[in-house]
Image (cartoon, rainbow, N blue to C red):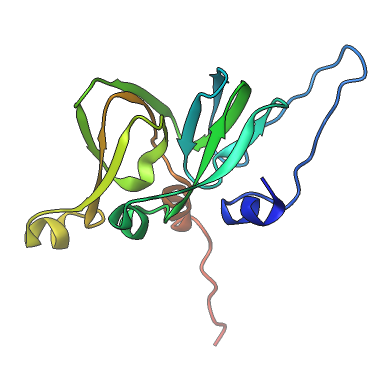
Length: 181
């Protein structure tokens, strides 16, 4: 992935490479409160993830920009048209917010979820966005006006605290500047 396309998919223009010159260990930590998801990808297997989810991977794992093909999902899906695609062979690590809920969707099984809570999914999962029905639900529901529909087969990873939700939750604890007169 070139620097420009990496930047478009939420990553840094530069990619740091570490190479062991002996028996050594490397450790890494999440940037914010959340979990690190380990993916053991076989040759050609991929996972599509939210922008900014990629943390690191072994040499040989390919990181690509993934364009959302459905206009509704791109415009109203919370993550926009640009996602990330991680392809094996090798081990890759994703950084997702809060706790992680993994689910294997069966053929034709559907799950409706707030788009911001989708951390990653296999390419076999169909991802679509629909508007919430009913004016009362839209006005008084307390959530967004769009829901994502994930249709199996395939594995999905949901996150319980996406970064924007974490920022909103912490905002009320920040001091408010007051004028002195």
